[in-house]
Image 1 (tube, rainbow, N blue to C red):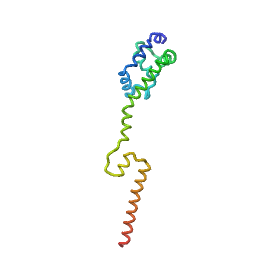
Image 2: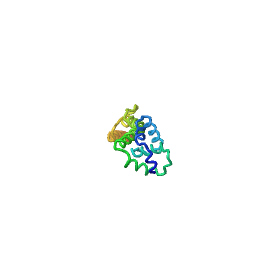
Image 3: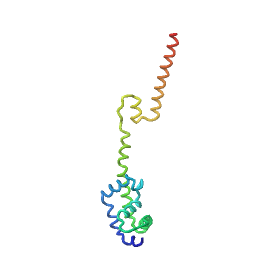
Length: 151
């Protein structure tokens, strides 16, 4: 492993991260489940090592730990972390877009549906339901009374 660590050009390893296409490539791999749910700078380093590994490295986790803890500068670590955050943002962009659409008004024909879908609070929905139930009870009482009077 020390042979592997000595032959890595750490500046080249970090310069690969400046390319916007790399962010998209990693986000696609993250969506496909080839990268953990939330990517960290250290996990991104591991992915890059696996992607550029020209040596037969058995213990990639130990190599990643060694490089992260003692071979990278703070600036290089921040670069990996920043790119990992960009990958996460790219990966979750579609989900965030769908969540935002939840707040868009929905076109409905009935007051209850309109209240339900168009940002009405649960309390307001319960009030509407109780009004409908109260009206229903009143109608049932009127029907019972009218049936009793008719007899």
